[in-house]
Image (cartoon, rainbow, N blue to C red):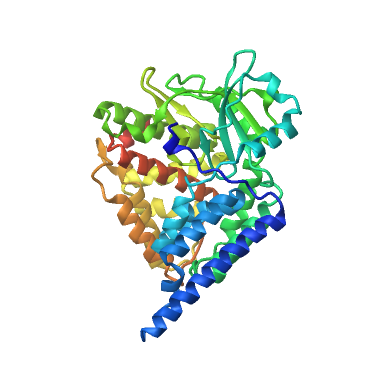
Length: 437
């Protein structure tokens, strides 16, 4: 990683008081900027709108900066709202929250040393060749360092930010309240189910021993698929706060935009086929669609799978219900699609016909690659834009505000991420053939 791409370093506030102070500082700064802007507008004889005062460039920068410095749940709640409800948010807020998916700050060296000493003991450095304190990646609840042990193991060490686990509930509630009270979230948007799930997911993601178990499980499940590489867990160095795994080299997957068409097609075909195996065969899915979770080794032509914190189990009945949806979509059987959608929980028999039709229209849009006979060109389709517009129209219809089962949100996130990656790589693949295999 070049110096220009190193994460910004700042200490993570680990106490509840310190984290609350960060939020208070952000709220005060936002309010101050609003007041000054409002006075200027009034002095010019204008009647400023609250949303215009809130979403100034200065406030956008202040909110993003503070949440990125806090990391943990404060950052994660923004990511979840952005991914799950992005179609319903003001564009400026969507931009703020989207930036949080990649703008985490890194811990300074003294804080890294303190965390490792607490988990490995005071003499932990004796087990390593000089430990590289410059992280190779930083995200919402932890950062990753590359290190070599004295016995020759080349490792990626994920270190959790201090205070993340104990602050999950209060962080999620405080940030959501701040966004709601500030007017940045639409009043019609019921984020309570998302916040409840954010807390549950964060508690699981904050247990690195659980993630290590998911890592091993996926390694076993994909033992028959040499096209994929899953890092090996090093249990002797893994705790709830530190995850040790083998370092696997590769280039960012989005850097392959100029690779030969056949290579780009193959990469996306592998990932779509993996999604179907996760849903229909494994009943276990890595649901975080962040591009950083995939890397590619051009020499071996293998896909590297990283970060299994957001792994979710699905009941067999859930996968079967989606298989029915897909089969009905491919057959053009709208009545069967309606029954399958109702079984999943997208709506019930009491929902108005126009709302049922709107949901089915969106499902048909999302399943266009399945309904297409032959190679589907992700690089030229406007499917994502049409889905966005349809989602906005349905979500802002106050007569139909209904959050489907949480499992579907995780599947939507994964599917949406794959669509975005396929579009970025301008892939052309036969999705119908993959699901029928």
